[in-house]
Image (cartoon, rainbow, N blue to C red; front, side):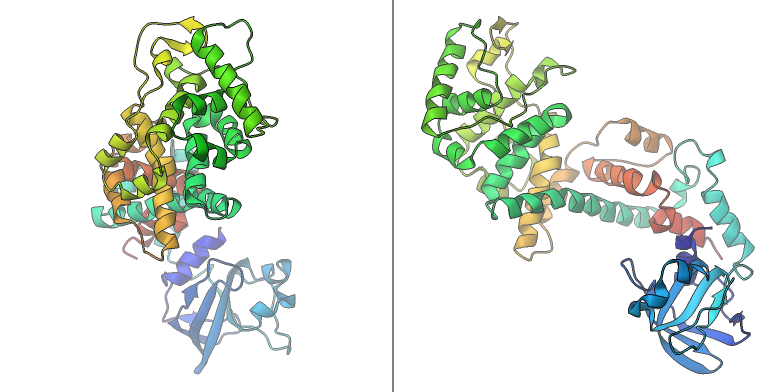
Amino acid sequence: MREDFLHFIWKYKKIQTNQLFTSQGENIEIVSEGTHNQLSGPDFFNAQVKISDQLWAGNVEIHIKSSDWYVHGHENDTNYDNVILHVVWEDDVAIFRKDNTQIPTLELKKIIPQKVLERYKSLFDTSKKNFINCEKQITSIDDFSFKNWLERLFFERLEQKAIYVEELLEKYNNDWEQVLFSLLLKNFGLKINGNSFKSLSEHLPFSTVRKISDNTTQLEAIFFGMVGFLEDDEISDHYYTNLRNEYSFLAHKFKLNKEGVEQPEFFKLRPPNFPTIRLSQFAAIYAENQNLFSKILASSTLEDIYKLFNVQASDYWTTHFTFGKASKKSEKKLTKKFIELLLINTILPLKFCYARSLNRTGDVSIVDIISAIKKEKNNIIDQYLALGVKVDNAFESQAILELYNNYCSKNNCLQCAVGNHLLKGNT
């Protein structure tokens, strides 16, 4: 038995409400179940309960066993002084207020309908599941309710991404351009080099980047030099030598210190994702776009973003993936797929936070842009598709990832619209 299941029972009145009695035999009538509290304190605020013809207004606390009241130390917490009813699965001990009056207790063990208990047990019977608890029933929820749930999940996921943005804003005194630089650089490194590129953004003053942002060579020199890519005396081609000299000059001029910057990895990466290529592309973005953050804010469609990030690595990298070693000629442009990753992990969270900073309910372009992107392809999405769940675009695939990561994989079915739908049934 789970406490959140008892919350569900009380919230949706899945009991015979016309035949309720306290453990002391007093008649109970639920006038209002109150407001579900997801934070600390009693589980339901401002409930109204009539006990033996006396109307009580206050809070309701729910436990598996009534003795949990003492296990959790509620007898010493003033937040629980106004509890008017203790709802439990099993009443194993009497609970008293500070004035020595007994708190009325409602025991649920024998009054929850059998059908509701069976649905609950079936939902959490992992012996019959291969992927998620509701895998055989997930498509039974109506499309309207499921779409609404996906919308809420998408914004929950966006809220999680926004937490890091808010941390950067505090760190950089609400300098949105610098926050964009830091967040964008980190996400250019993807999973393998994300921390390395993040360390670069932390040790390279953005004021320096601003001063040289119209010079691709100088930007590349600083990026490559700070991550330790310009220290090989065996490489002698003109491009490499020029970058080394430029970095030496800039490091002295701006008093740069690369100590603490993690050197990026090449291992396990496909050549187009090599840090050399990504840093050159990153330099191109800033060289071609002054006031990048303002331009992002002005971009309201997916095509706007594609155009804004339509850059490629400098000419040297057309025939190279690493310094000093020639390769087959190929343009090293940012692909649409990579730009879409930047959208999901950098641009849209920033737009969301900026709109919120202006006390707007949201930037409507966020949903329009994410809905125009094709759904992501990964093992989690594939398994939901196999269950018959429709996933049409990145808006829905992001929502599905949130559903899996924070609900399905954690057995939080009772906080999920699908789980609630299945438990409610017709009873």
